[in-house]
Amino acid sequence: MISGLLLASCSQLATYENEDLMLEQTSADKAGFKLSPFGSNGYENARAYASTDCINFCIDPTNPEYSVQTSTISNNSGPQTRVFSYSVYNTLSGFVLAWNYSASNNAGRKLKISLSGAGFATPKTYTTPLVQTSGNGTNTFSFDASWGSCGIVNISAEILDEFNVLVSGPVSTNYNLIGECGGCDIDNNEFSGIAISCAQDGREAVYTFGSEDGVDYFKMQGGLTNFTGGNASVYINGDLVDFNTTSVDGWATGTVGGFTVGQRNPGGSSNRNIRVEGGLGSCEEVEVKIVWNSSNSGGTITGGWTVKDEVGEDLAPPVAGLTCS
Image (cartoon, rainbow, N blue to C red):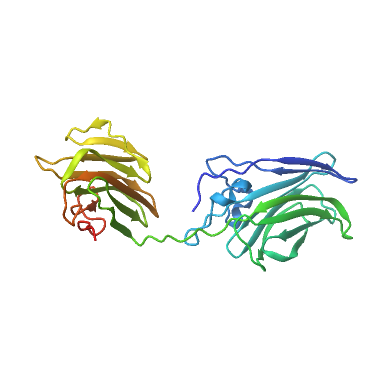
């Protein structure tokens, strides 16, 4: 679902009576973040993201790729060293914590993680003893209240001694939840046309082509009947095309938004052909609006229009000539 995301980096230093701790938000580069300390838990392909960009990203249930936020608590200033890292991400049903630590001597220490905020009607806690010099694990917290995109989960980490007395912390950070991607309302490939205006001095028609899975190349082409005047005004997704060149096959040509648009009068005909070439991503569509003058007083204002692939096969059923009612 998601590629090329970047987690904003931050750090803060807190000093306590027994230990000095540093919380570091680990930066990830655009090539993709690999959660290497937790690879054995299956998250090595997860990616990090900027917590303020949650509105721009979503989880595709059919092909989820979860965004990871990771933090580190470390104490390397004394005779004993201790490094604890944890990473979090959300699915569509819960919140996942993965943790990893190494230490020269834990002496009965315990790690306690607390969660509150979006998705949790009551705060959640997770405590694990740090009884060895290294270890890792995971825990999943199911959402027990409504949650949505950009809801904030507050995460607090602290280290306790064997008597549950606070030794270090708490250190805190926030995670902005990522919501589910909206479904695509395009079914396979769809092609349609509608007559907007039938005035002879200002006819207007709109053709729309959309693709559920995307197409690398398409050519939309059709005609305008009894065309008069200069070039038709053609708008691609609202942007006016500037027909400033002529193609080798004699079409007045312009480009806009990655689409190449051409128009010409075929042979000695008074009709005009319009063509639009380009590609579409998944669940994308292109709207082509044409405004022109015509001497035609009949009810049909356009010829038939088609949309084909690179070998001339129809990508969607043709649209018959548009008529004025």
